[in-house]
Image (tube, rainbow over the protein chains, first blue to last red):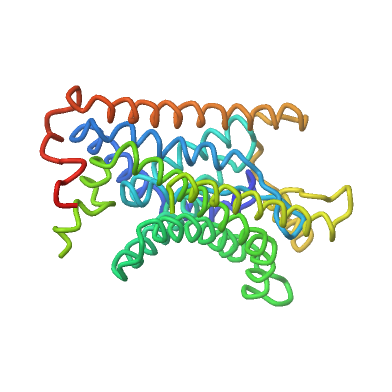
Length: 226
Length: 115
C-alpha cells in the first residue's frame, strides 16, 4: 500500500494531505487524552502501536507470486477506536519513508489515508457489526484485522487509479489494473493477519481483561448483557 | 476445547496459509521475478501506462543495497517486537500482582462468583 515517493501528482498529494491531516491531529489528541486519563491503558496503546510496527515491516509471499505487507491496524482500531490508529500509522509510515525509502513524504497523506484511516474504520465497522450480531468476540477481531488489511489496499488502488487514469479504458480501467496488482495478493495475507490478530487478542484477553472491559471491547460479565 | 489446543490450531492455520501461498506463488512465476513487492509492481504499472510521468520528489535517503534494506526492515520488526513483548510482559506481571495495580480497577472482579 506504500505509494512510492513522488509517484502522486502534486495536486493529488496535497489533496490527500488535506484530507488526512485533521484525522492525524484528532488521533494524536486521542492518544494523549487516553494515556493521560487512563494510565493503565498505556501498555495496551504501546502494544497496539508495536503490533502495526512489526506487521508493516514484514513482506509476506502470496499466491500471485508477489509479496506484500500486512498492516496490523485492525487491532488498535478494535481496542481504542479508529482515530488513534491515524496517529500510530503516521509514525510507522514516517519511519518507513525516512529510513527505508518505502512510501514517501509527498505520498504520506495518501498512505496515511489508506492505512491509518480507511483501513481502521472499515475494520472497526466489521467488529461492531459482528458484536451486534452477537458473534464471538474472536470472530469480530478476525474480521476487523482481515478487513482493515484488505480495505487499505483497495483504497490504495482507488488512489492510484484516480491519479493515473488509463489512457484507453479511463478511470475504471486503471482502478481494475491496480486492484489486480494488490487485491488478490492481499487476500491470503488478510486471512493470515486475521488469524494472527486473534492469537494476539487471546493473549491480551488473558493478561489485560480489566482494561479490555473498561474499553468495552469485552463485555463486563454475562449478567450485564442479559 | 482447551485454550492451548486452539492456539496451536491457529498457528497451524497460519503456517498452512503461507505454505500454500508459497507453493502456488512459486509455481507460476520465474525465478527472477519471484515474490517481488506489490508496491514495486504498482510503480512499474505507472511507468508502463504513463511513460511521460516524472516522479517529482526523491527520497532523502535510500538504502541502495537489498541487504541494507532488509537489515533496516529487520530493525523495524525488532523495535516493534521489543515494545510488544515488553507491553505484554508488563501486563502479565501486573495481572499477577493485582494489589499493586491502580486503585481505579479495584471495582472489577476478574472472576465473578456468579460466572
